[in-house]
Length: 287
Image (spheres, rainbow, N blue to C red):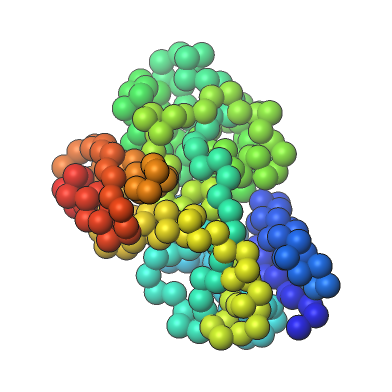
């Protein structure tokens, strides 16, 4: 195999992520030529539906996956948090979790300390809205859709006073100068998989073997923990769930947030493996 074709959405962020994976492939396999296959997804076409619903049905990834399934591309690159935890295609494997950068949530526009009561903060995420309400209940979360760069532009144009975005996305687009406040995990627990890249390939293919050389095994265990909690609880369908795993020595530490019909809850748990951390997280959150 002397060429690898990378399927990606056409958004600026998606293409930046695909280029990052291409760079990693080139580092590991310098003889490999690389070609990008750009795909328009249902999530790109639908600019009105709720972002959570679109993510749950795979609206941002299905068309990219199909390019690999039907042979137009060899691998697909996704933002991991866009990838549903259930209903994946049986012919595809998650070949690599190559990296995770700055998984935290940030504000662009005005910081919360600068916002007067009644200010508006754009976010399409129930998780972000719920945690924002615990920090500044006098600030109004309003729905905002669009790519990262368009959401930043809407803040700049004064449509909202600020917007909560992923630090990773802003960094990858060279827009980190717009950040006015970084939320700590104590303030706002990120979404499962936030900041991480995922690479899919056809099961048993040479491309899957090549992609597997990019995999970060220690990171895979953390991300698997977050996604398994989401899968077991199905919390994404009925509540606002935050989960971020990290290593604490040889133990997995997971910071958690959920808001559902029982109200908002936070917890921090530790365990030595994926099964243990997911079980502890469910017990602490009552899920």
